[in-house]
Image (cartoon, helix red, strand yellow):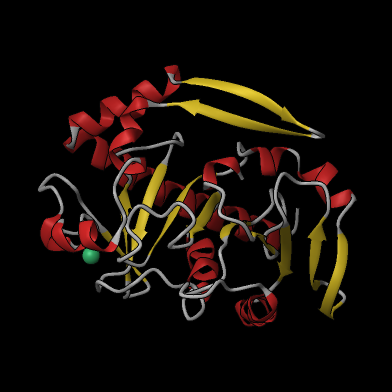
Length: 267
Ligand SMILES: [Zn+2]
């Protein structure tokens, strides 16, 4: 093994341990949430076949608090924003990322490790100027996925900019990736290794951004954003995003962008 390879492994271990330590520390201080994470192991999951795809449906009553939250303007105006620091439970700890975002444990998890990553400042959910943050989070923490739900696509706090992060490698989108990528078609490229593909046989229209640097990741995303349809009175095209660094490839980011409003759990 080369020195470079060993360095890379050390870096990866470092990122992973940092997250795990934070996660464990939080659960020790917040017994209710620790119980919810433990109960995840016995949540009922059913696989449903949709053509060549399998969709996982999770029966998780504890999630009703967040998935059933009213997100109309009036309801949002009345409730204290649960992502703002001043309204968070006392037991919830946070860790700053990049000076503008905070890492929190998601108290209503769907993944074995599940984080919420809100902006420190209360501001609407909007991806265009904030997409690069996904890349930076994946740079800082190894072996996680980062995802984004658009304000009309499943976000339970569309009034407060946030991402989510969690255990990588278990979403059907990832476990089916070999088959999905084999049938993907390149639609635009800025270099041999940085391009967008259209995924033809997924459960929803989806695109994949392959990038090596934050700059090219953002450039490709902006190209895609510019051509996605935006409905009247909507603040952005409807989309969910799932991003990860594939196993064993340490400098290549994949961002999967589904352009209809499906819950991220289906991606
Ligand atoms: Zn807020």
